[in-house]
Length: 195
Image 1: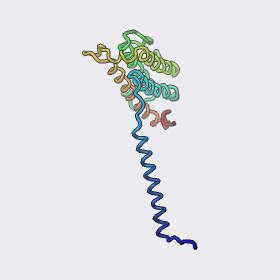
Image 2 (image 1 turned 180 degrees about the vertical axis):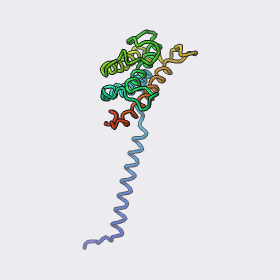
Image 3 (image 1 turned 90 degrees about the horizontal axis):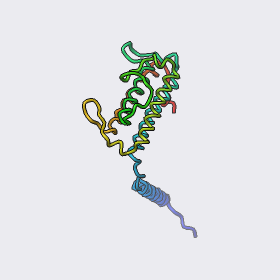
Image 4 (image 1 turned 135 degrees about the vertical axis):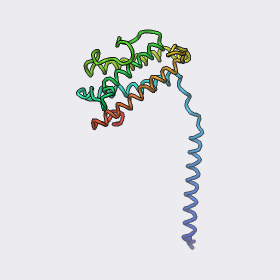
């Protein structure tokens, strides 16, 4: 004689299986969360990662933005698209030169606001931005972690090189944000937003 099961029993049995499955899944999830994280990269490698990430966003914009709009600006008292890129890269060179103690990079005059006279074409601007990113990366790699703790004259005080690199990365990020606005004002989508 075959034993018949009742619907409530089948339902309880099914609920019990679901509960066991959930508990097993939660247990595995808990084990995954308690695994030891990978070790941190060196400070120089972390700095280099952030430097390259921000710098490459500016390079992509420099390459991508239409040349006929390079002199576009939202308001008369703002920098043009090209002058924003030139300024951000010139400031990067000021930091690179301070951190390295050398005069690396091209001569763009005094300060951090090169004119379009020296960078007449889109290709000239792109090359300057690319060169600044590459030269900064090279200095960070060559000097390594020890250099990040060295102090350098910065204005009227001394600052650690790690501060200078962070300052330059953040400064480029501000200009990146402004250039995103230039893209949007021209009904264009920035390269990083297309990914």
